[in-house]
Image 1: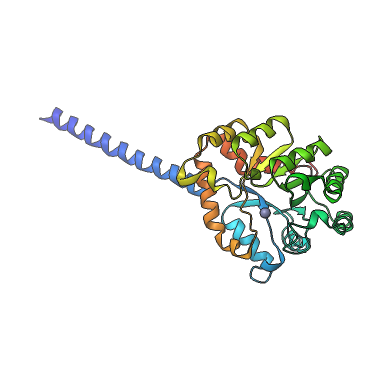
Image 2: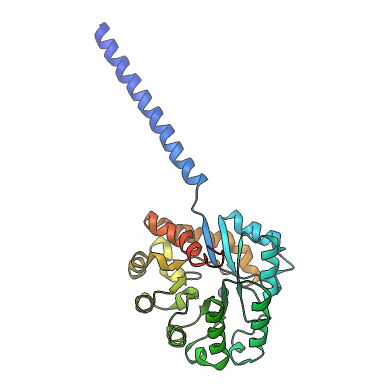
Length: 287
Ligand SMILES: [Zn+2]
């Protein structure tokens, strides 16, 4: 019967068209995801002397760009590594001045007075966004050398990138309540401790490099999820290429970071991926 045939044809046509539309819509959405992974501001890159031979500056930057890093805060032992990367691509590198002239000074530098003339000389010669990454725990933050570093950061309007415990962070804020601190690895402290300090200090940000403990097996620890949501404007990512070998692991570290971002709401993910880094280094860009 013609009417039934027509109805059957209409149903078939409709189902064909809708699956066709669904297929293309899904494809387009998928293509969007592939084409547009979030850009990443990496707050924790080192290009230290023992990596220079294996990875040229071009190669190092290429490896980071390949996984979506658009910009990176770089500090190196010695600072020469940071200069090499910066000269290779000044649009990519935000330089931070590390007080170490070679690997192995991280336990002793805060007692070494020769660090101060070195830092002063570099600060006169080049522009930086920060001093660090430097290591201080507890009372080490109150040595005369560290006090002078805090004072120099203030004088030059620079951030401090500090790998230290919560007590060290508190001591630095006692010395300069207006200090701007990027807290490496959030001090490997508990969420509760990090939250207390962030509530107390508006100028405290933290990078999540090496914090595999907060996002194990694809699930964010609930106390960290809450902290990242409550203070989404305070956290940044970082691969932390602290040894030459780490340059070979850039892909897998980035995969972990992207899984963490994907587990967060889109606006928090965007802030942590890129916007916070861009905002806190704006001063360096003269904006
Ligand atoms: Zn580091």
